[in-house]
Length: 149
Image (cartoon, rainbow, N blue to C red; front, top):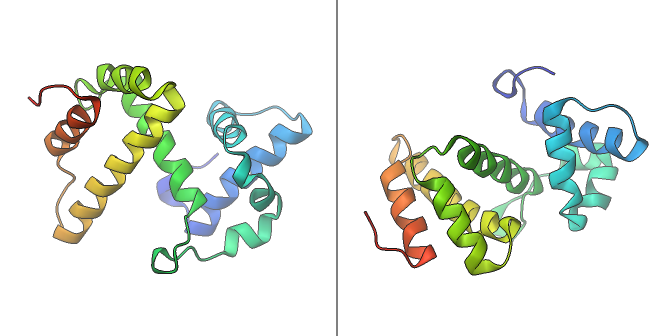
């Protein structure tokens, strides 16, 4: 599977669609495909969309129109899971555990974390700067009810 940074938006979407197709048909999955399929399985609201593969790959998800982009949502989940597994930024693993306790599950904790991550990424993009990791951690600390560092 090629690296994500070498792919167009449509190609990247097809990675998700193909992982889900292979999972459903019982075909062997690469490790990343298995992680993607597991994540999609936790989001039944996206199953029909991903099974309509060409429509999903070509669709426009405009925030102004209130459309939630399922590929962005799933991608942010993957980003949060990577952060937790590597504990980068430092302390994010403990914050995830605290949020999982607060919100009842690791998956729900991820939903709250990805909202914060999305905001921090959007702010960085608007400002033309790198994302502010400290701001991200501080927002997660506030969400977890922990003292900010």
